[in-house]
Image (cartoon, rainbow, N blue to C red; front, top):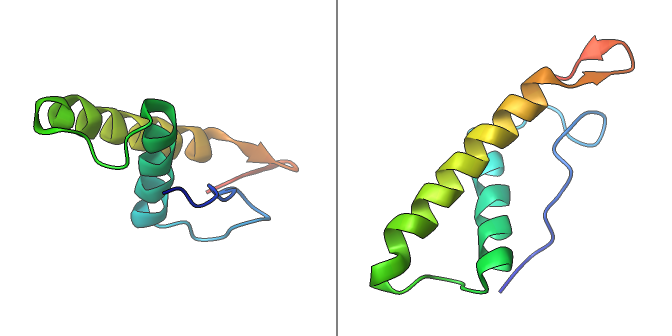
Length: 72
């Protein structure tokens, strides 16, 4: 069900894509919820959580300073 969520900040990753951020968010929601795919009645909440976590992840990565430089 779940692959490891990889580190998305430099120097572990450069030029992180939106797809990579969303994949990490999806894996997080899957792990926390215990669902690989939600039932229809939970799909909206599941998808909303993935999008919110992806946005928060992107904001975090954009605001990190790594060794005196901005991460993005």
